[in-house]
Length: 451
Image 1 (cartoon, helix red, strand yellow):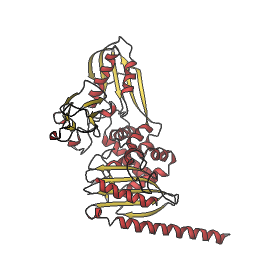
Image 2: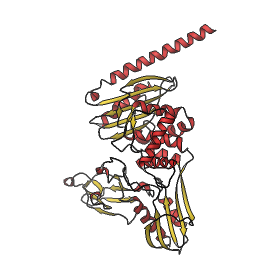
Image 3: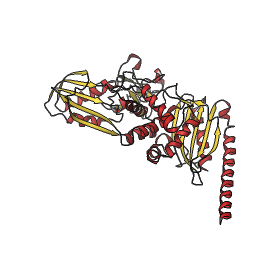
Image 4: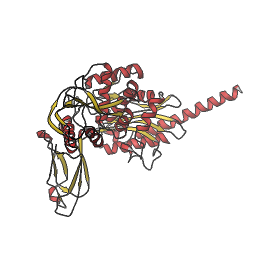
């Protein structure tokens, strides 16, 4: 019996070595791809089921992670804050005034705003509506964030008070030739104006553009160029808190409430809570990972900062908490330097080895793994992986976080191997001229892993 068991163990080990050798050969061949003649890649594959390293290539090289940094932020937040944590927004009343205080709930939407407005009795006369933005410091962008990303919704102005993530979605639809296209904006508000200078079927006008007049810190949205198909653009609003308050005043007015003045100020201790929302941590995590929402990731970072105590928090404090998490929980004190929670900062650098350490940590903590795994995009099905790996063995077999900025393309997560094992993998491409080609290369790697 003992000899049979020893033989079984020996055969299993031989099979595992054979698979590892086969995998190494296939991945080595992919590293000889023309793409990597002009760019670089770091690769690490770890068999979580067998608890063994399968493949590594330049795994200690520090690379810019792009949105894969969100995996770090989410893991730290679920560890330090817990999945039951909430991001709250409150409306208070005191002495004829209203006070709205937020904690960076990036998913606070129009329905929440309407419910808040309906909580104030019809006919109420409000002397001053105060916006309490004391939750975080006044820096509305992270270190090194690109100035020319300003008008786009993926780089909103950071604020404790966020409506629809501090952005407006504009949908432009073509009409008849020579006429102006139709457009719709969500949420609607007089806080911004729209100038529609576009036309349909006029190629001389050039490509359709939908931009906010960001160079002048204006909330004028201009639609220009030739509209040939339906186009959707998400644009940030200059000063998110002002946008939040402006829409709240509009909702209150529509409900028969008079607001005489608007100002910024803190909630007094004697104020009574009239209305509140509590956004579940799991909802924020899902949006951060599935749709790669930057402001959701930054919100988690600021709430991590709040674990250190105090009343007003910064991105730097949040990064310090992430650093302590990496050292205390993950057991990794090298191979990374992180300056924000979303991966937008060009100062962020992390090695494939450090990312893999986080993936292993998450895997070995089922309460965290369940939330992360279900929130990661599924290859060929959902989120930022919706259009990837189709027609390959990796289709519906990979849950991973994507990351893309100019010259950088990253992918990290979990793959289901053919033998039933769960693999953690990290792919970090840098210097690639074409993000499309880098993604195609990564999909081929995933195909090999799942075979």
